[in-house]
Length: 367
Image (cartoon, rainbow, N blue to C red; front, side):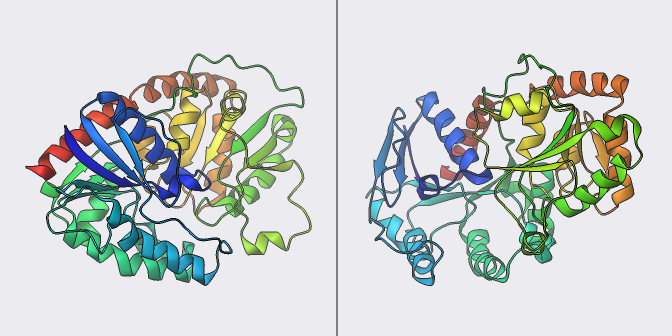
């Protein structure tokens, strides 16, 4: 049994991309029965997984979320507080969120998952505080990690180009697919007419403002396009958008949507539109394909790699290109073709495979 430790305090808050990855991979790793996992946090998460032991080395005091004090306490826990809960005899520490504690012991081996280097590639999409935090912490990860897990070949290439990490220290391990997104789920015609689906709220990184412009321009063509709505899930709203009186006609902001509801939204969408500026993986692409939605995504980042030829690719910086992608994906014959290709492509992503490959990375790091 290989002893592994993970800081899981992310799982005490809202679940977005990194939290989905962390929870799914932990579950798949635990199911192998090949690891003794210590899950570190500032409060109990309630994982209840085989051979996973939850340890609370320090409890987070009550404080206002987002305050300077809360941020400093979080940094202290991530770099020094969580280390208090490590097994005494040494351990393999996996930084699933992409970071490693400054206080990690010399006897411990380290693996870091790198989800993307977007803060370096497109710093304009990130707030100053995030850029400063990442810039201060990531050089330590590059020096201290024995091995890296890159979630795509694109991210692995970024690690080599931008951080100087040799390819011999990097393993590419794709995400898996949650069984909730079942390719066999039947689609039912929506009662309020056809719709396009987008996720991630309104944010610069998701390129939502260009998508809104493209949707308005596409609807203005009239005909069948005029009947379509655009549904956007997610809580993010950029500050400029907040000052607008209302979203364009035909656009609905759904806010947070429970995971149990997402498969239905995917399956009934005329197309899933994901023209992000930069993605290190892009799990919603796979989820939409598994549910049978025709996918429109970007030519940039890891999106083409993950789509694997089963999506319409558009230039995310060109509104006209996005308009063309909407037009193409909603043509009946093209939609049928994309649905079949997408379902086949989605079968390539399994958390069991991700767990097996990650354990191989652990063995290499520990050797």
